Length: 467
Ligand SMILES: Cc1cc2nc3c(=O)[nH]c(=O)nc-3n(C[C@H](O)[C@H](O)[C@H](O)COP(=O)(O)OP(=O)(O)OC[C@H]3O[C@@H](n4cnc5c(N)ncnc54)[C@H](O)[C@@H]3O)c2cc1C
Picture (spheres, rainbow, N blue to C red):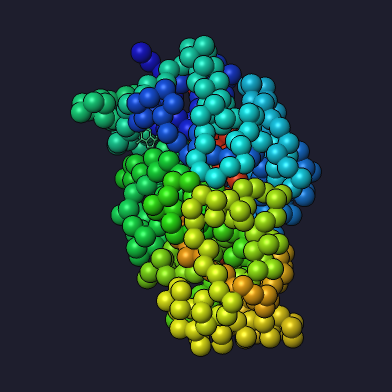
C-alpha cells in the first residue's frame, strides 16, 4: 500500500491529522501501538473539556490572546501559542463537522464545550462511551471510510532520513521490525510522561514518586526519534498535571479526580519540617511542577482549616470536589482541634507548623503576603487564614498527565532542527510538541485543543507540500 503520510500515534492529534488529510485529498496511515479497538491514550481518558487557556472556543481571538498572555507572563502572543487563539473557533467547528457533540459542562467559561456524552462528575477513571471515546471512534470510522488506514499494535521506533528528508520509519509489530515509507511523517505519540528516564532527565529527580495521572502511553518514542534526526527540543521541563491525595497510589478511585488544586490554592503547603516552600497561589498545575522538582516529591502536605474544607473544598462548580468525594472514596483527611495535634498526626513538628501558620495568618491580616518567604500571591484566589478548628491536612502527591514540552515545531507543525529550520518531511502534533505550553508559570492552554489545532495544521502543511 502506498500512503501520502504516516502518523505515529492514534490519539486526538493523530486522528485529527488523518481525517483532515483525507479532506485534503491525501491518503494517511496511522500507526498506533495499542492493540485493542479502544486502546488507551490520554485523549480517551480525558475529561473532554475543549477550551483554549480556559477561554471558550468561540471567545474573540483578542480575549483568548490576552488570557494566553496572562498565563504566560506576556510571552504567549508573540510566540507559537498564538496559533491557539487564531484557530480556536475553527477547530471547534471542525470537530462539530466531524460528528463531535458538545454540552455545556457548567457555569465556568472553560466548560462551555464538553464532549458529549460527558463524563459523570464522579471520582475515579470513567471513559468508556464518554465523549472523548466516542469522538475517537468516530474519527477512526472517518479514516476508514475515507480510504485511510489505522494499524494497531505497531510501535514507531526510528525515522528514516535520506538526503536530508524524512521518508519513513521503522516500527515494531509483534516482535518484527517493519519499514514504512511515505513523503511525510507526523509524530503524535502523546509526549514522554510514561518514560522514567526522560522524566528524570527533564522534570523530576525522582520520577517513580510521581503518580501517572493518565494512560501513561506517551513514552517519548517520538521525542527520541525526532532528536535522532536533528530536531530541536523545547520546554521539556514542564508538564500538565494536578495535585492528588497521596493514597491515589493505592486507591484507583482517587484519580484522575478529585484533585486537591482548589484546596491548595487557598491554603498552605508544608514539608516535613513544617515549612512553606512554594507560592500556593499560583495554582495546582504550577505547584505540581514545582513539587516534582523536589528531592522528595512525596514530602508535601496541604494544611487548611474547617472554613476552607466546608467552603472552597466543597465548591460544586467544578465537581467532583474533595469534600465529600475524597473522603467518600476512602481518602484520609487528618483533623485535629489544635495545630500541634495535627502536626503529631502527620509527623510534622507542631511548633514549626504553628509558627508557619501564624506568619501566614499575620501576613493575610496585614496585607503583606508578598513579604512572606516564599511570597504568597493573592490573585486570582485570595489566601484564606487558617483559624477555624478543626484543622485539616491531606498528604499529597503529584499526578503527571502529559508533558507540555517536546519537539519544536513552527506554525505549520513542521518539526524544526536546532537551527530553527524545518526538517523536510517531518511534522509533529499534540502533546509530542513543545513551545506552546509551559514556561515559568507552567501555563496550561488545553491538551485537546492543542492536539486538534496542531494536527489540522500538520495535515494542511503536508497537503500544501504535496500540491
Ligand atoms: C484524566 C485526563 C483528563 C484530561 N482532561 C482534559 C480536558 O478536559 N481537556 C483537555 O483539553 N485536555 C485534557 N486532558 C489532556 C488531553 O487528553 C491530552 O492533552 C490529549 O489527549 C493529547 O492528545 P495526543 O493525541 O497528543 O496524545 P494521546 O491522546 O496520548 O495519544 C497518543 C497516542 O500515541 C500512541 N503512541 C505512543 N507511542 C507510540 C509509538 N511509538 N508508536 C505508535 N503509537 C504510539 C499512544 O498509544 C496513544 O494512543 C486530560 C488528560 C487526562 C489523562
